[in-house]
Image 1 (cartoon, rainbow, N blue to C red):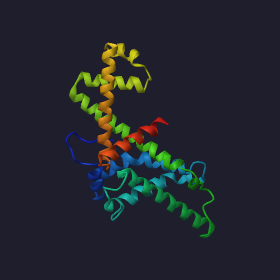
Image 2 (cartoon, rainbow, N blue to C red):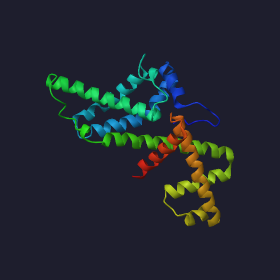
Image 3 (tube, one colour):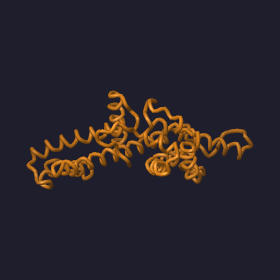
Image 4 (cartoon, rainbow, N blue to C red):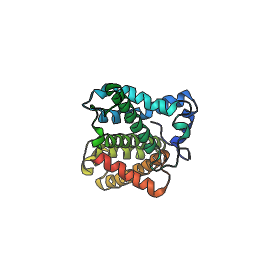
Length: 230
């Protein structure tokens, strides 16, 4: 995914406005970036239902809703609570409900509810959306940190490797130290610094996605980490 650039004040809304304005490259990037999140929502909402066969149609309708002339992106409010996450989540839920209503009307002559749909009684689709969103932003923070490490040099790249060994391979620092050719005490210090660098990168990615206030950024970061820790 695209990540914020050092010293830039732009946000994802910059790209989103360009997509709404008709830029083909921006539209393709927009769909590529957020499609996994939308797909995860529909997959969770319609799991175990014949509606699952309509997943690709649902995803397509979300992006058509966003990108059509006069569509949702054109009038998006970039200061809403939750930033772009809340905006995309709302559109996705609305499209799913609209498709279910159309199916109910077609299958029951406009009477009753969709017998294949049970997601209204469960928070699972919303939770799935949020977890997928959290993974997307963590990936963005990792990319931003790696981009900066390439500029800063060997020590910064080593810190990324320390984080990888700690979280991907679940190794204690005492075992990581010899693998990165550092004394244990220095490895602990580099690990602490790496965590701070990642947290700073995550804050920037959250801010890039439309959460602009300091306290709200901290709250969003905490929520993302909690979601992925479940």
